[in-house]
Amino acid sequence: MRSTKILLMIRVLSLIGLASVLYGGDIPRTLYVLNGLGRTLSKMNLETSEITNDFLQLGDIPNQVVGFEERIYVVNSTPPEIMVIDPQDEGVERRIGLAEGSNPWFMAVVGSNRAYVTNYLANTVSVVDLENGLVVKDIPVGVGPEGILVVDNLAFVANSGGHPDFAPSSVSVIDLATDEVTTTLPMPRNAQDLALAPDGRVHVVCSGLWEANAGKVCVIDRWAGPDSTPAVVDTVELGGWPGDIAITQGGRGYLPDWGDEKSGFLYSYDVYTGDVYHSRDNPIRIGKGAMRVLYDDREDVIWVSNFGDDAVQKFSPQNDSVMATYGFGDGAQDMAIYGGADFVDEAKDVPLPSRFALEQNYPNPFNATTVVRYSLFVDRLYPATLKSYSCSGEGDSRARSTSTSYVSLKVYNIAGQLVRTLVDEEKGPGGYSVVWDGKDSGGNPVASGVYIYRLKVRGQRVKEVRKMLLIK
Image (cartoon, rainbow, N blue to C red; front, top):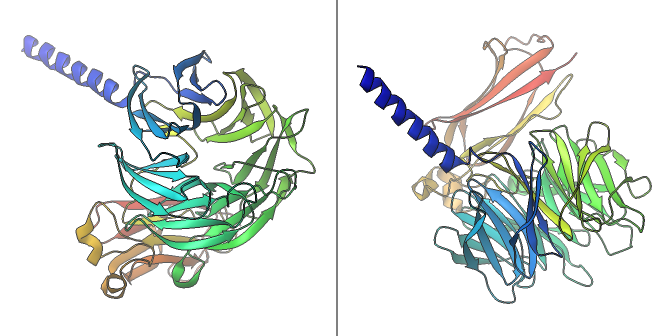
């Protein structure tokens, strides 16, 4: 009996060790920094603040560092390629070549083996099979595509318009079920990057021309247009020349601006109301050459790369102040965070979409009424389900007209008791919204407190659950 127990313990410990290797459990939370001028990758142990500079040589013109699952990816414009890096041994596992002259810019990883890469000069988005190292499709988009953001079943691509006029600028919306552009939204000059707000809306930073003081953020509601298609619903005027965007879980948007000869600038605004806190007229002054921002929801901080200072700053959104400054390689440009088994990269890297999605209610907290949004769509991994689901109302019209799913959306109190059923019926694919007036099934106002709302689709094992706060 004793020997059996010992063998069992050894086996368990072996499995734990294997899991540690597979999921990066032995690697601490690490900030990876791409140095544009030095063409190197640096890193900082976020637990000890120990910095290792220039541990890996990159391409001649590196653009972006991305993390997903157990790998780090670097997008090089020259040579045009994706470098696949193993964080365990910090070596280049392989290189995936892209089209010559395409000038790859940014990428988003979807699922476990697919990536979407914007090609600035080719005016395309390449769909890359990461497992086999092949480009399986090139999707024509707008002129000068830069940033890309994947949200559920859609990829949003910021088309800058191209140098030197940066016009026409637009956002192309790609349906991931078909890998085709379904919507093109005009934008102010020089759309550069995108971020997802807690209410499910997509915020697009448009820089304008250099020194034109015309920086803006356009807000896209994914279901506001005809047939529940994406549409621009608001524009926030910031001025200056912001080039990137990050949004905190508290709903504050931050944008870096290269700045002046003294310092870089950081702008901020409320993503729900559009109220501007810091603009070109009253910026937060940070390090020189502020280039990119990265939100770390684990610590609720913003990381800012300062290209001109060869440094990265840790910034507190609670009091709008710099917490610490760390020196890195030549031209600190882009950042990604490895957190044991996961990466943080402004929601650019997301799992393959489920067949339905539930958004955070808005407003939250709320007083009288709040809106809950949800969507039903196709899961690309299961093409056989095309007869039952489509993507946000787009795609095969026959699927849209004949396919339905039984949907329930219910509100519970913190004790798990049913308070109100908001939806309990057959629904076709698309985006939906429903208003809860803070009353129970009998029409009686409920008390202040935390409530749970749950979306469930019949036949699906998973369900989406979120919390909301009612304050009277």
